[in-house]
Amino acid sequence: MLALLVYCYANGIFASRRIERATSRDIGVRFIAANLHPDHDTIATFRRTNKAAFEAVFVQVLLLARESGLLQLGTVSIDGTKIDANAAKIRSVRYDRAQQLREKLAADIADLTAKAEAADAPEDDPQALPAELARRAALNAKLDAACARLEAEARAEAAAARPDDKAKKAAYEAKTGRRGRPPKPPDDTPPPARQSNLTDPDSALMRRSEAHEYRQADNAQAVVCAGGQLILATNLVATPADAPSFAETILAMQNTLGLPATVLADTGFASGPAVSASQAHGIEPLVAIGRTQPHRPMTSARRPNPSRRARSRNPGVSQ
Image (cartoon, rainbow, N blue to C red; front, side, top):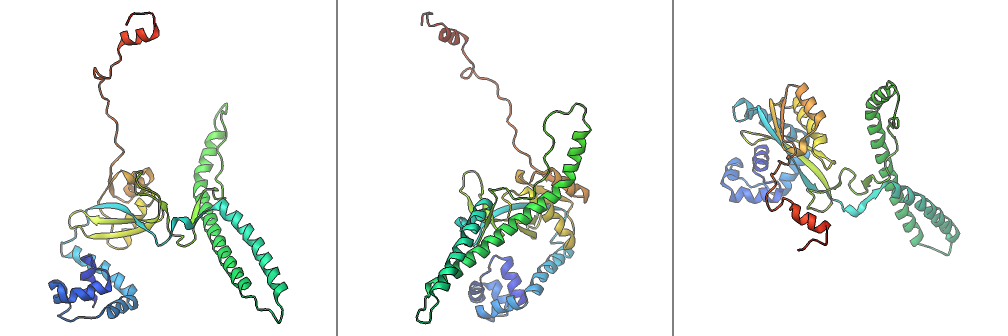
């Protein structure tokens, strides 16, 4: 069963029902399964029951491929793609809007509780009030959790920015004849426009490019061996840009297969801190930078006409 799942996943067959059908239709799968045909419930139960061991096996498979020469951990490539989350973007709420909704819900809950107490008589059985009260209380709990997440993120960002803030403040105070405003200290409060999704808080609003619409999605990162096209590492982040997770994804390989010698990445991964962190661990990052606009000589069609410009300034000149 283990060999069956490893082979099918490596060939892009993930659904248990598809694996079950493949044991009858695919010659490679039939060979791996010894011409047996386990049903989809058995396959899914095996994967769930042995989840931790099954995930560890994939690392062992890559190590075995490395020992046999199929995997050469020299040059790797990294790229990301946006995957739609199991949540609607309309379920995302801004921090300032969440604060307003929390205040309104607190007032609504107090009002509904008072109505429920007033209507709680032996001859009455109001079913709507408790249900409405529970619905508002559940929404209020989700808003509380969303605000707590945003506030925790803001505190973590402020703590990470404090060393740089101290250096900027020291440089500003060391100046003679200070001009301009002093550096602003990092704020622990989330920006009003920062959002969190109530259904899937691990996802974020992002788009694939400027030509696409915003969607509630995750940014999936994959590190691939440049020679054998084996997937060596993965990461799932909630940042639309690829650069913030560049160093994190690559350096995490140190705990599994080891660090590569060279990393290839497109311009979306261009980040000075990530490049410095990679170089500090002996990795050579080859990252594309943004395209520069070459100087184009002015053609005759684009070159201004001095006589035409003079005529436009002096309407009295004959045309």
